[in-house]
Length: 434
Image 1 (spheres, rainbow, N blue to C red):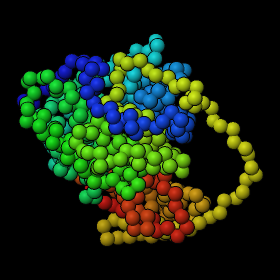
Image 2 (image 1 turned 180 degrees about the vertical axis):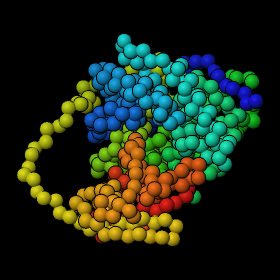
Image 3 (image 1 turned 90 degrees about the vertical axis):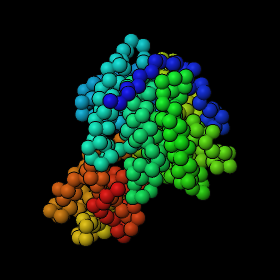
Image 4 (image 1 turned 30 degrees about the vertical axis):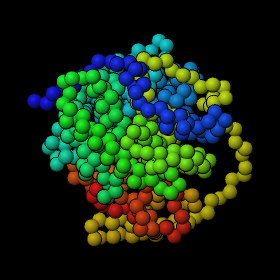
């Protein structure tokens, strides 16, 4: 029988041991914080604030003190109703993220949140993930990013989990850290945050197996090295969307690398440039980059700490900005090539779409013209529409299959609802394994 691990609340003292120097060096200066307003505006004004996908944004906004008191009250109340009405259908990672968002700081006045019940339910969902791994060749119900979120939330909110189990499953060579043979930086980063929390909570606990702690230390060091190995010339860690959480992982693990391996100012400045170029139009993308730029990590989540509310200089209105209206101009049409590739069979069509369309618009037009060959289904995620089925063939985590999006022979890091297509593009959805 596995030993269950439950630890008492240690308060703020526990995480005062986390290195702060890198957080402070990378934090955007007070003079430059106006550059972050587009991120905050994107999150506050998104339709996602009314769904479970608001968790990322709410966590980021509350953790960084980017809301005023009225906004915090309104968004948190709305989100609690969403969680209560959807909890049975949530994945483990969605529930973990919801708990982190609600507990980023104290609940607004007059609001009561039953954390113990939410954490108990998360513990049950986490156990289902582990059972699925045991029954299906190590494959969780969801993925290792969500599994890491589970451990992080259970650790921060005093839930039940097995340290021995963590030490067993979070080996950096586990296949679940990899996608098409490429190390997943955001998955590794979330695992580092979870492992750091677990390790910090074992300090002074005599009954903990020293071998487990040694493994967790070694895993953390290995994951940090893998994250740094994905550093680009301009300082990004993996890609623009994985960089925010990778920065958090490096903040809390500065004893595992030297200052020559990562110059965080270079990463920060590249990210600020990308913000000005509109790279973070999706609320989830904005939410995942903001904490690092504010010198925060998810280990700063503390349901008993007072919330910090945004100052006037950093306040962003929830009202949409006034936009001048210009006479409508009929958009031009472009032609793109679109294919569905299943094993060795490739079905191709040329479709016309409006200039500025995204990959999903191409798929919709192809389906309209030939539903037999090009029908598909999506589900809504925090990153927008996700392709779950094409021509009746459905992706499976147990079989590690999915529908890969490609453009001009290259794998896409953006989703179907985000990638803007161009005239003459060769677009594919390909039945693939990972």
